[in-house]
Image (cartoon, helix red, strand yellow):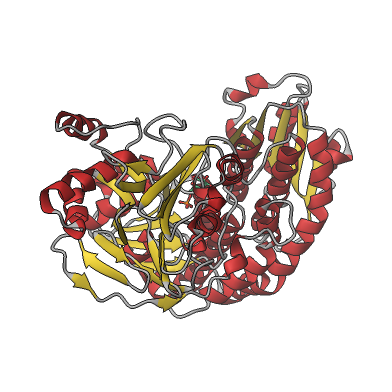
Length: 610
Ligand code: BG6
């Protein structure tokens, strides 16, 4: 995924500075390369290179670029290696047109050939360059920029958003065709960007766009058009209440540690949101469905696995969980018109999830219930209903507070559902909901405080570990998979998350003296997990345990440092807390290894590509 930002200003002469400030807020969308195209006195100054915004800014003086309008782009490479020539923005045939995109142009190779055969000079291997040439092509034919931008989308296939301008005209145009785009109206300047944090340094007065729409920016207004027929659409702006400093570290060394520490507040906020108005609608959607699928990717999928256990235990509701890219080939033919797909995506823009959304909507195969964090996202606008995760922006590429919020949402919905269908009695349900409301925020803080020290010490003993397993059982199945994903994402270790009873059916062969295996458990399941621990420890494996302190487990850790314990809690609260030591362990190990956990190599916060 990538990030684009375009600004048109009446009074600024140093457009580079604000473009870099706004662009910097999109770092989590990609940091393979960065570029700025700034227009000064009718000439486009284009500077771009591999590296992060900070690195390229220092190297090429991006912040010093002059002009009153321009576009910046941060790239996560898909088409074309992360090189200088493939960095964005791009020119068209000459240095008149400039622009950048986010997303994928699926007909890249065919269209590139078609453009070359009609005389276009294509400089890079990056599909974003074709967006600029497509506009260039239709401008030649129509001499009308609005029409040229509109017609260009007919040639471009795929899911994308792009921004484009001309050296000799002040307007910047942008298109939303499957990737996120939001605009803003400031004082004598307007802005368009892939994401809200990048708009906020200029204005909180924002306009959310929908797919199939395009816009024209002038210093004083944002005009929205329907691409299909060029009709002007009435799209009032709205004031965003997202904190402009949300994309700041707040004194923490990394966003990841800040966002882990925000989890107590997230617990309070999300429970407040769940008590809100649409709970009845969400519960009814689940109750009335013939089949309920839960589809997600990455950490959101791991949270969904945890949710499946809650729906089983508290509501007796079977949930079929699948990863986004797997859903259509695995379950596509089982969908019926009364199915429900719970689509979980903190960004609301993950292409693998939007593909499922489109499959359901285009074939009228039931309803969709989004679980999302980013207001104004494609998933928000296009699902039948959505549950807000209320986490505030999550900037760090590895998910933490958003995963945490999702597990709370699923446990809450399951309890409410179980109380309605009688799977659990009213008193049991109320006891659990009270524990969520009254104990979870406090217990979350206690776990962070307590496990932080333990995790930091344990991390130091794992510096030379490059291969390990993380096993869970029952409710901690998804928790262990999430812990393994964190270690893979930010420590670059191979850590496989697996169901602990499955480990003996083959993977156990990996265990040799001191081979590390993490067991994530709860007091409810430790009687079973002890069998699986024994299978490892009797073969000399190093057992690391995450869970409440239990006497029965003490003998299985060679030394105290290998036991990351969490405070005692209600049985069914514990699985929500058990992820915290794993978040902290991966964080401290990543930092000890000299890695920046916020921007792990090769990754991006949201993958808006297939
Ligand atoms: C990956 C991120 O790209 O997408 C993960 O690196 C994330 O952290 C996954 O869990 C799914 O993202 P989303 O926005 O669909 O929840």
